[in-house]
Length: 413
Image 1 (cartoon, rainbow, N blue to C red):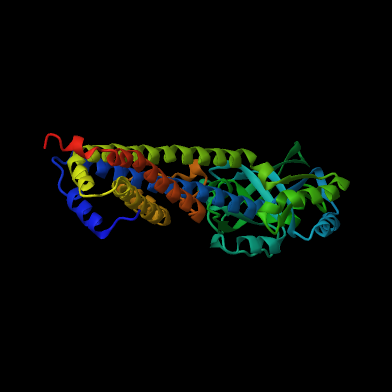
Image 2: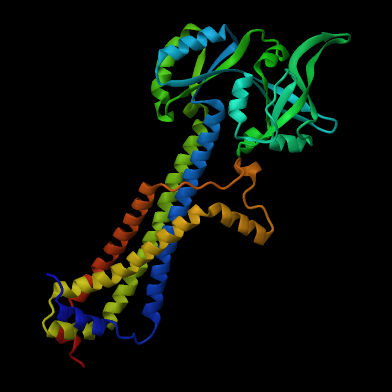
């Protein structure tokens, strides 16, 4: 039964009157703020977790592809094998042949272990066209190398300087076998935004990597990119049949990073559950607030019942009052959460400036910026959960209000 205009007017007149003390208002305020902060925190945390997952996926896949094919002793006739693999599935976008080996980066003051990757010069230019922060992509001959910015800082070199590369492969010298070494000119410094890559990898041309690591006309692996990361498992099953003929081992991006992806998924689900419990605790405050409001307004409720207001109308009034606390708190929390998530990197920089400390170390978190990606479906689910908990919290107090006996409530008035 809908509330009539007279019922609404009388109800509002009685229910808006000031409380005998401000205690109920304080509880209502805490309920409002609790729900707002719980919803905002839930949106911010899930957005940051999504941002981490997206950044790691984009950076890992950007450098490694969706699938990797390895051979223990190198891959000969790699052009023919690449053409055969490409024909196995029309979902394959690119196949990149490369050499990857561990090596030592040596300058006058530093010796640092890292990884050398050999790529075709054209692929190098395409890969680093948007990631180069110093120097230029100029490969007129083979003694050129591109290194990450953190590795450059550790080696204390810049574009135009020289760095020596020492490999595990041995060469015969005057005093026996010694590690193979070559001096390279640093033509460029790149930044991917991912600390692990910027701190340990150097890129040289594929042709010279074959000479440096004694792999004539060979590569060590293929990196395959498919049309969508979600199709990697399906394409892997097809590629595996062709790879078995050449003795290649196939790993997709989920297998190579399974520990990290599983950890992110588990942590994200646990954080969502914990923060949902915070919203639930805040909704319990609505119950306390509404129960105390019913006790204080029992005389007003009795008068409303005496003049003809039905129990269902009384119940709807108190449900609406409690739901407004949760509804407005939820809307405020969603607004705060979205604004915070959109500007989280600027907020981080401001906090670091004010506190004079580094709150987001790239050495610890492997990213140079704090990422956040808002998922509309998750924000909607969060909003629905908060509103549902707010609504459920009003049922018992509203039911108690509707059960007040007018004669009993007015007996001593």
